[in-house]
Amino acid sequence: MSQQPVIHSRRFTSRVEAADGVWVFWSADGREDTSKVRNLSLGGMFLETPVSKKVDSTLKLDFLVQEGQISADAIVRRAEPKCGLALKFTAMGDDDRLRLDMLVNRLRHTAANR
Image 1 (cartoon, rainbow, N blue to C red):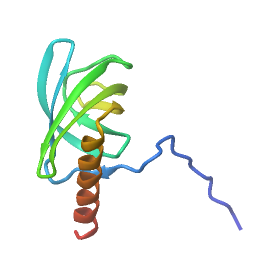
Image 2: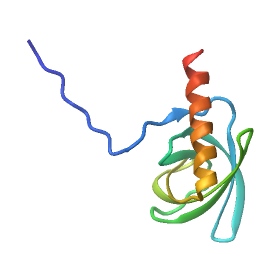
Image 3: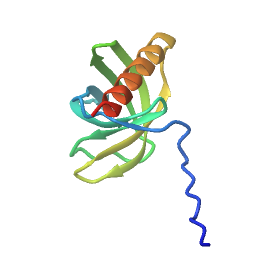
Image 4: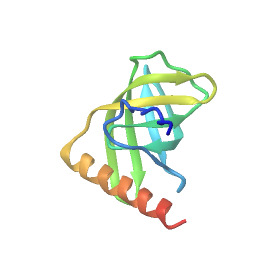
């Protein structure tokens, strides 16, 4: 009997695909843009953008979703040239965290019903 290797994730929370067209307004280093969110968790997200940022760069994020406005600070953990940025949330208010939780739950529910 062969055993499959165990793959451990460094993420504390699993990501959910943001197939419903979740967009975020973001700013960094005086530049502002709006980008599609590819996937999302309570700990971070992947932002689709051709703009590249260095690892450890900081961004300010503002989601406008049906759950209400969600504002957060994030740091770039990985940059994929011409594809996007993997972000880790670094600061978020309590009300924003609650709305983010509601958004992630809605996306999970939507994905489960496809």
